[in-house]
Amino acid sequence: MIVAIVGPTGVGKTKMSIELAKCLNAIIINCDAVQVYRELNIGSAKVTEEEKEGISHFLLDIKNINEDYTVMDYQKDLRELIKKYNHQNIIIVGGTGLYLCAGLMDYRFEEEKEDNNSYDELSNEELYQLAIAKDGNCDIHQNNRVRLIRFLNRKNTVNVEPKLLYSNVHFIGLTTDRDNLYKVINRRVDKMIEQGLYDEAQRLYVKYPESRVLHSAIGYKELIAHFDGKISLEEAIDNIKQNSRHYAKRQYTWFNNKMDVKWFEVNYADFSQTIESVKKYLKI
Image (tube, rainbow, N blue to C red; front, side):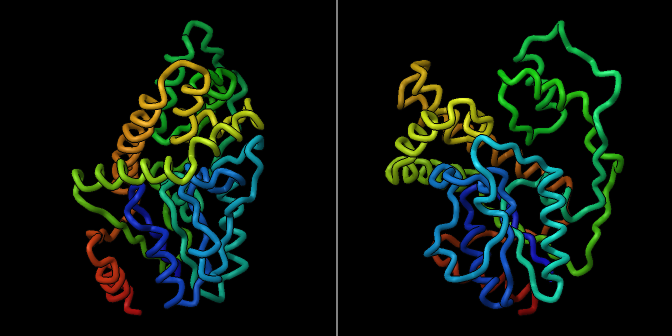
């Protein structure tokens, strides 16, 4: 059985994955585009060693911050893990919907077109807006003109409606109402600041000033703007909260449009009830 746990940031996906893995004797595979990078811990809400409870986790901390890791890389790595561990249950957890679809579905990526459009007449901001229109999950920094043009000149897939490649796959979605979700996200950002996100981001920015992921990941890019003197710390924190809320909305749109998700309302007062509801649905 493959269980994919999806949902917006902050709804309890990590905790759910641990509890289900214990019941299913399963491995856990990360599906968060930021958590594949080493050192990006607080800002990505990466699972801690204590939280893992001894359960094997994969595709966490596999790349340095100054290295690139694409959706095609993830597709290859995920499929290799599914093949290697096909004798046991697998839980995939994370909010990067494109990665999940590319790994589990018949997504076929094409090479760049030979006759590339140079987009000379467009500004970086205009290029960025085109990239977002093409893929709402695009995380290329606005000032990275070369990568934006490459992205715009590349076809995403050859399949309009990709099919699942694996049987017995269950998409479990965790959700809550919008007002509560926004409160959860705001509190989570405040907690990250208390845990040392400022120092983490500052240290990594000094160490990797040109890192693509630092300049694009929510929680880091906003603080970099503060480090560069463009905005105050208060504005940076407010921007992290706002961008996290906007990202959550895009996540919902992706999951609802691309996957057959069974949604579960999270009981924040007693999360064990949510766990039991999911276990009942999965018949475990």
